[in-house]
Structures are given as structure tokens and as C-alpha cells.
Length: 115
Length: 113
Image 1 (tube, chains in turn orange, brown):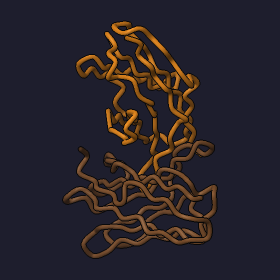
Image 2 (cartoon, rainbow over the protein chains, first blue to last red):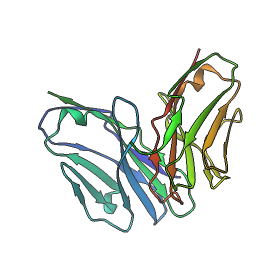
Image 3 (cartoon, chains in turn blue, orange):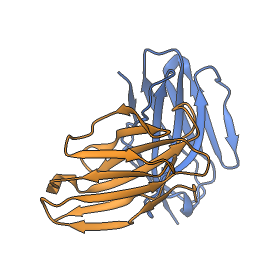
């Protein structure tokens, strides 16, 4: 069975600070995919990034960066110079192998950026 | 805007009733997924359809059913509603397989009174 753990339930930081959201996953499959989604107060789920298990390169997109480490089964997400618009719930998710149809989500981290 | 549409946005109904939630996938996407988001269960996969056929089932109750039509839109039917069915129901679509990224619609918020 697959599992995604987001131990940080809520985080608050002052605007312009950097913040890292942790994600730890469990799977016995060697082929899997990791995702981050953002859920702003309006409620929709917005796709941020997808990583496959064969690609451990870190990813940077503007103020967002992701650190994938297979050795620790972690896929952490860092926001640099946070902004109020970053306030949202962030979900890490996992899908495994070929033919497994579901996304297994973590419980989410609620991020509040204080102006 | 993900390109996935869901209607209605909000739905308020009473216990024991039946409702239908509708989803239109992104243009070209063949797979449709349904998820339920509730306070106690979090985000949970319900069911997936691919090109009109059921592909996978998750934690979907027997009172719930879904289908995907030839035009690829999908409907989730919830019957004999209970208070605990109150949740945000998301539809997602992807081009082909689950390893393709799933893009989510805005959700339907169901309130059962």
C-alpha cells in the first residue's frame, strides 16, 4: 500500500520569508510519480509539479523549488520570498507503477503568509 | 483554469435524496477520475473511467455510482444521501494513463441537511 505523510499541519510565516513544506512517501514500487497540488481558499486544486521516480533532479520554477531524495523518500517543496498569494493548502500526492489509477494524497499543509 | 468543468458548483439537499454531479474533462482527455474531499477522510479516490469504461474503484460506497458517456463527460450519482456525504467532490482528467498528470475541476460542494 502507498502512503504520503505531510507532518506539518499548519505553517505561518511572515511575507518574504522562505518556507519549506515536507512530504514523505512510502511505496514498494520502483516506478512511481510524485505530485504537488495547491488548494487556495477558493477551493480548486491546482497542479504544481510532477516528478517520476527515475528523475531525482531538483526542480526550480520561479520562487518554487522541489527537492526529491529517494534515499529519504522525501519530496519537499520550498517557496522562496513568500507572498500573501501563496497562502493555501498544499498537497503532496503519489501514484505508482503502470495501471494503478489513483492518486494517494497526504493530509495537506495549510500555509499562511502574514503580510 | 484547468479546462475541467464541473456542475453544479454548490448543491444543498436533504438526507435520503439522490443527486447527480457532472464533469466535462479537458479536450482530448480520455480518463476521468472522481475524488471526495471531506474533513475527516481528506482527499480520497472514488472511481476512474477511461474512454467510457470503468478502470478502477477506490473507496466508493455502494450508494454511489458513476458513468462516462460517449462524449467523455462523466456523472457521479449519489443516492440515499447521509449527513456524512457532505463533502467537496472533485473530478479530474488526464490524457490517458494515471501516470499522466491529473488536472482537477473546481469541485462541487455538496451539503446534506
